[in-house]
Image 1 (spheres, rainbow, N blue to C red):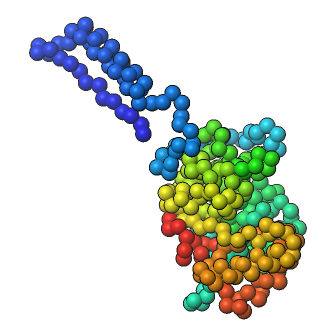
Image 2: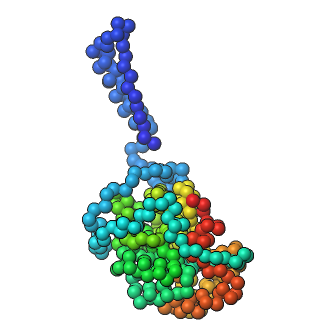
Image 3: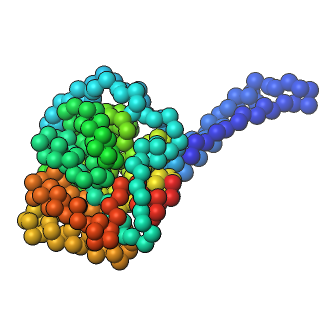
Length: 333
């Protein structure tokens, strides 16, 4: 917390202050402040392992201005910063509700939200994902070519949009892509990358993490993301790429509406495993009243979803956008 000090003035009974007294007072104050700093502040920042959620700053400084280009890390592909979309930052308190797709749910029906990650890079498969029976939730990569046009196409298809936000993976051999959020970035660079990802297209309800096992398990590094989402009135879907994730805890701390993934549809890409994951999704929804399933624009996944989505309603399930589940069961923002 910032420390403030007020300086007082010493006066003699005659109302005048002697020069020696002033000098003595200044020296005493300096020595006292130095001693206080030496006693109370460690020479280096404490390790992250010793920090808890209570150590997270609630109101960090606003992001630095965005430069014309985002400087890549060594070995990272260069990507130009697109002109900022004036509609990307929506000036309403709850943008996640403004951009939500309406869904009617018959009383007592279990809810299933299907989220397709990594959309936008493979254009053919991305078009197939957007052609799925609505509503599904499309998690679009901000650095996808023609991201704005693809976002608009998804919206026209009746689907909700998420920014698929690249975050630091646990495996250093994995590449999360350009402008990924990394825990060792300087604050200004972290803020600049976050702002870049949130301003490449409009009409989205929130974000979910692309990779991110390392970042989502670090509550201190994750806090600035939640602050930005709260400021914009957005929601967070924790993809749960690690069992150590702190996503929902940090979202709750900052009042961000949030929910987490329950099933990965295509963790195993064999057709039998994909269909088994969809059955698992039904079982969880029947048991808990809802389920959030995440898949990817792969042919095996899209084949299964094209077959499964049209018949799931006939079996008594409501296919809903992810915001519907957040409103019913998610962390309350």
